[in-house]
Length: 262
Length: 378
Image (cartoon, rainbow over the protein chains, first blue to last red):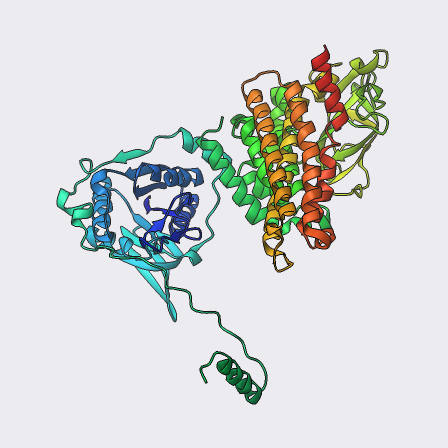
């Protein structure tokens, strides 16, 4: 079985702040990490590999050269191969152009049974790239996968998370699944995995290596432009008023008087 | 000095320590031991064989890698370096002095987390002075084996070890350390008994006891190295062992600093967090500076080990400095915690008790000074 896992290197948003003047993310000194949902996607692929001898897991990412770091991390966890799509021509891509690029690379790979992707990336929260890749490749997809129930020859049975319940879905391969964090607990890298991964080469493809036309990739093929990004201003501090309704009303009235509203 | 793999190992060790060690550190201290599944998990991710070659189940990594993992583990739980002992005291005698059969039979299962080993050198009357060893392991021609008698004390993993490398006199006529040999002794052999677990001041999760031998029959093939080589074997692995203990001291110090920084930001007195008080802030600055200086000393020694340079003096310096440092940093960090730091609910209390051991075991600070001054004055 051949499994592809789409991953993204993202800033650790727990540490990211927004520059209030420019409205852009302050990424200086912020650690870059493997997108958490993608880690669940990789784990799902590795669990299938653990149970099915001969399974090959290839991770694929689009990003600047330093995005190779997350691919090495994926290999240190057990992925067999890694492909980085990296070129200035890919820069500034929105989800439309990104999914075009990744789907192009997957067309070149051609031979695969399952594509896993994380539900969404923590730096954009769009949840669009996975589904768009499936659309471009013309393969079936299930989003919000919480459990892979069965993995048989030519088909999978998965449990899909909904807001108010679940769907059990049988899906033929090749297909694309997007993973939610409830799907599994990702494993750590291993010591041996790190040593081996650091010795291995990562395949790097640019726009000439994959079957895409120049007008389908990068910033010029991106209809979405982020006009401004900002954090809403924090609201003022609230005050808890305790006591019976009558007492509470008295306290509120007093406070409002103090502030000259009454 | 550091490569990509070292950065990644630090990330791995930090994550493992935060998710697997820190949450159970207090419980392991109270229960005096780690759950079996933690040993298996640590082995599964390869921590048991960082420096052990692949043919024996390890990675064949360098000493810097081991030092990094020890540092990160000990930031969260000082006793957790005992999970890594197959890389140092428990495993190194086999790796450097064992034959192929001994390595496969005893080293590999330790690396894979299936067995626990121990290193039994210290005796009630022979601590720093190995020449005073009284345990004997004498060849008995009639029985066709060695006969081991005696008692070892303060043996890390003693209560739970499956086997141990035991240093004993095999030649009663040779003087001092010359008649000492090393033997691999299995715990389920007749006459082998584990002593009562010691009730120590700290590091409870890293269990310690006597090992007692009463006419234990040791087959000839369980002699490690050559007869009379025991002291050479013990000394031969000491340098690497000292760098590992120095990394432990470094980790404890760095962990205490982390605790002190966090607490000083949270604790409000006189209307502001106490980190805003200059005395507290300057204490933190002193601690951080000393830790960084020690870190360079420790990793320099580890780097020299990796380059196969002689490091006896550097290892002694690193061990001496880190052993003393973790005590002084723990003291200051507890002082910053005030009364709360004296309570067992706070990790600094556990870390402070643990620190006290680092300047004592695997050669006291005074022995390290003897080694350092010996090099200066030779």
